[in-house]
Length: 449
Image 1 (cartoon, rainbow, N blue to C red):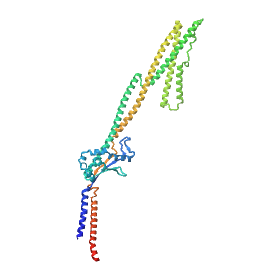
Image 2: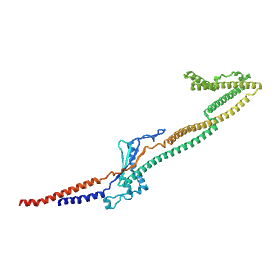
Image 3: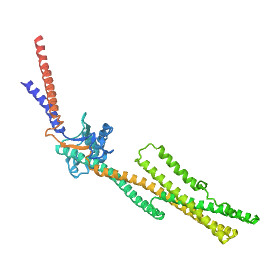
Image 4: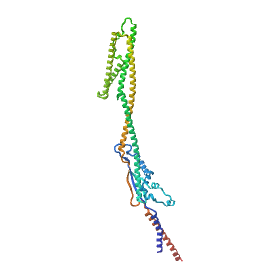
């Protein structure tokens, strides 16, 4: 009976302090879990841009989100929340025995970073976020705060990027619009100065007019040379015959250089029409027909001018013969006409050069204007895409806020209590065995004597 009491006393003395220490020192912890979903495909409304579609390097993207969740920015923002700062975990953190002995306290940011567990769930799009604390309410509060601040941080980063890009596009859009209006004003002024929006046609007409003036000047110079020769011949002739009357044959059209050039142009166009295999109603064929008609019209106009010049010359010769105009007077008039025509020709050349320079400026401005309009259309299309696609849901979504079960996730008190009971039983059993052996030793000695 005494031995049984001793065994029970030893069991109580060993197990009771250990069990009391286990239940006093070991605090059960509750685990709160939240879930974040990272989609591999970003949806789109209308347009396909670089901001939607399949996310490249998806695993790296998910691991980056894990790092962002545990980043100091997100954790510090979570700790700055008033409800977190009022929590027991923040105000009265539990200390280990070493911390109690040394008096060192771990900052809340470091405790949160060490205690927060962020782990991608294999073969899924889910990232698990968990936190353990003796108070279930605090664990749930901390996980919710981290999820909320992470969602706000991701939204803010995305919004900042979108806003910066949108502002840049808007700036480019306004700059291009202002530049296009300025260039349109310049083009309008140049067209007003030229008097036509199609300067090439005006240049073509000026070239024809310039060639006609040059041809007239050439004919007048020939006349001056002929009158000079006539004056010499008249002065040296004894029979008084007039060489002018001997040369009253009308020149052929092909003797005129301008007529020959226009005739070659008409023949070339006619040959192109004969060799063309396209349908007569084809736009290119119709344009060639119009070019041929215009060339023939110029050729007929030149022939009429040559006939008019010849008639005027015959009338002039007849009038001179009737009025007996001296050759010297005719030569002086021809030279004066030559001077006036030379001045007119130089003026036409200067006007043509000025026209050509302005036409080139207009062409450059129109080329730049077309280029700016193409850029403007591209920027406007890009801006429209951004306006339509900017409200598309993000690839990151908080699937579930923190959930904390009613039972502790890590409660080792039962296990340690069982260990303490086993330890007490072992010590009590050992004590009983040792006591029994000690009591049996004197009995054996008495029996042997």
